[in-house]
Image (cartoon, rainbow, N blue to C red):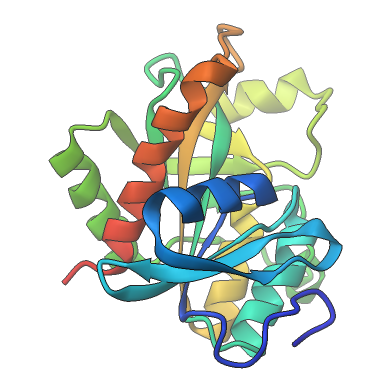
Length: 235
């Protein structure tokens, strides 16, 4: 048990999926895991542990933004010995060829700042995914026939951004989508020598203004969760 996670020793699996929304954690656990049971509800940040094809899995909400994710990822790694952490969440598309409902597998995550940025001082650390997880996720997406894009994303520290010039430069440099957590997850995984990946469903588009209707989200997000689970246990 930690300050923010009420699970007892042994109740957290070494493979953890991390959606931002705790209710999405509940939905994914009920939909994809066998024998899912609630192991955390501290501050309403729900976490469930069950099995996927016989493999233990925890699905733990992370909250919104890098500071919130940093709390849960740190405790999962240092106190519960989580070895594989995969963010599953939504993002905004930034490139014209990236469509609503497409899945982005994040190879790298750029950011202006993060909870870990003070450690590096003048160094611009480049947070990247675990290659084995990334390759396995690409293979899983191809088997499912899911439209997938692999490349860099931007982890913003604000939701209501007022920097159109920054968005323009992100698009110019090939950034596929924007979200708020992956850069810190990748940095923490590097620090603690763990595997990390972010798999994201495009729910809206910054250029076109399109947005995925709420009624259509469940199936689209389901593809992302299944890809993450297959990638976690590939090979």
